[in-house]
Length: 107
Length: 118
Image (cartoon, rainbow over all chains, first blue to last red; front, top):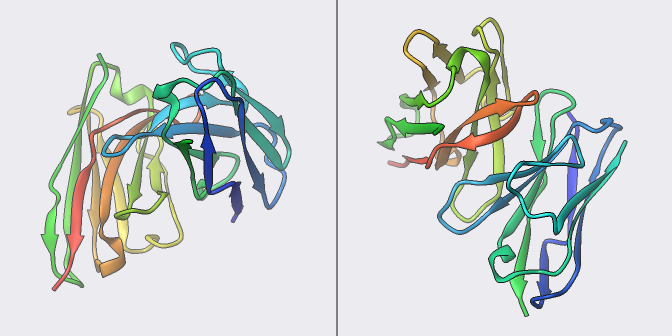
């Protein structure tokens, strides 16, 4: 199985900041990678697929990059609505696996 | 508007069985992969499994393989998760999700709680 290691587990930032979340996979997975945002008590929301393709309607301050074994989610100019938990997911091979999550909190 | 509504959750004893359903609307159900994802209380997301568009193949996470079965009824736009030999560690909110551009989960249900406890 492909293991996904997400870091950091917690991130404290302020409105207007730029933050980066990283996921590393135990083997190369090309670009079959997605990022989700989840708010308390809500279902996750897909932000990015194919490592860097922004879902329609997702603000352009979100961006994804990477291929192979290292992937990043970057949020520039943080807005109050962005404070949430973020998960990555590899979709290269079964079983699909999620990262452990990054909780983004307001400083 | 895409809608996914889970049902069938509740309290079950260890070793018991439960069947979850997910009613889909607002899209052509048979054209999409469908997945189940769960989240234990206070924990992260765990991929349970998915099923191909025509139901011909299913794939499962390691922790549920051999105990859970995913099925679908394309005529009724419904997805199911049969859970057998339930364990305390299966306690979670279970989400059904639509797969797009492959298996990316682009729409999710509201989730349903399954509690396994004696």
